[in-house]
Length: 287
Ligand code: G3H
Ligand code: ZN
Image (cartoon, rainbow, N blue to C red; front, side):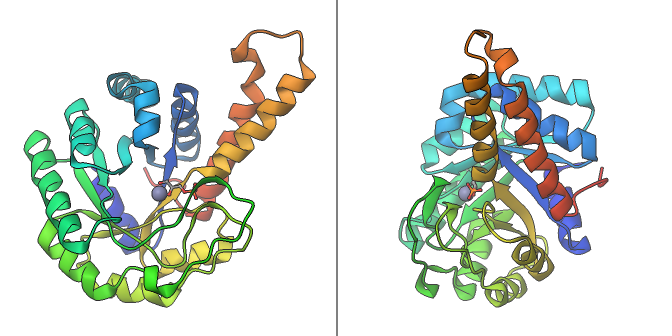
C-alpha cells in the first residue's frame, strides 16, 4: 500500500488520513503505536527543526524498525520544508514524502521550486509523494494567547491551484481556507465552500491537505473531509497534551530522575489525542 494509494482511497471514501508531527523519538513510537492500535495508516511528519533535532538517518532507521515491529504502513513526511535544499536532504535520507513549502514566495518562484523538487525526488524514489502549498497560512504550532486575523485574501485561489498542480506535477496540495497553525484565541472558521471549489478545480488524483488541524471544532473537520480533504495535520493538540502531563508528573515525582519513568503518562496523553483524531477522521480499521 503506497501513500498515494491510501490518500486517493481516503478521498474517494470520504475519510481522512491523519498526519502527526514528532519532535522526539518517543513521539514517533507513540504515533505508530496509536495507529497500530486503531488499524490506521501512520503518517509521521517532521518539520525542518524536528528533523534536524532527531537526525534524518536516525528517523528513517526508526521508521524501518517500527515497520518490522508493528507491521503497518508507516510513512515519513518532511513537513514544511522551506527550501529546495532542505527538501532534497529529506528525499536523500529516504523519507517517503516531502512537503515543499514555498508558499511565502511569489507564485512563479513557488511553481519553479516545487517542480524542481518533484523531479529531484522522483528521480531518487519513483514512489515518493510530494506536497506543495499555496496561500498564506498564519500562526505556528503553539498556544497563541492572541487573536490571529485571517482574511479571504490569504486563502488559496482555485484558479492558482489548478495551474500550480498542472505545472508542478505534485501529488498533494496544502490549502489555506480559514485554518491557522496552532491554537489561537478565536475559534477557526473554515471556508468549506472554498475547499469544495478547490476540490473541483484540481484532478481527483491530487490529494487535498488541511494543515493546522489543532483547535478546529470537530464539526468543521468533518465538513472539510466531506468537501474533499483527505489528509489532516495535527501538532499543537499533541504537544499541549504531552506537556501538561509531563509538567504534572515532574511536579509529583521530585525524587525520580529516570526520564523514561517520568514521561509515561505524557506519552499516554499524546496517544489519546492521536486516537481521538483518528476516530474523528474515520481513519480507523482502514489497513
Ligand atoms: O504541519 C503541521 C501542522 O499543520 C500542525 O498544525 O499545530 O495547528 O496542529 P497544528
Ligand atoms: Zn502545517
